[in-house]
Image 1 (cartoon, rainbow, N blue to C red):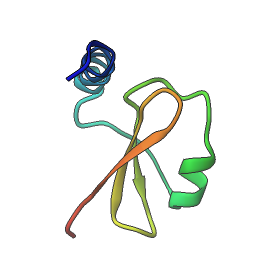
Image 2 (cartoon, rainbow, N blue to C red):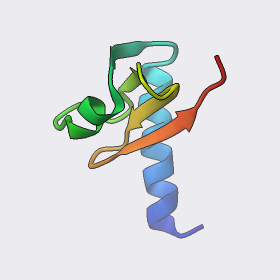
Image 3 (spheres, helix red, strand yellow):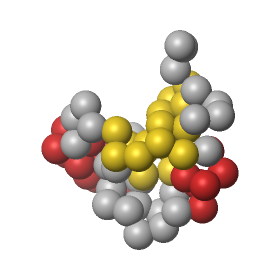
Length: 67
């Protein structure tokens, strides 16, 4: 893994650990993806796609969950 990827991974992991277990808001995936200015590691729940989305600083990453 490149040092840049490693640094990004470490920053996201650290921010996610600070916010562990905290979904900050629930909205549609389109509205979540349109958001800007959230802190790295903010977790959102998509109400229309069964995804958890995590803000990575400039974009959102997603994890599909089974409900």
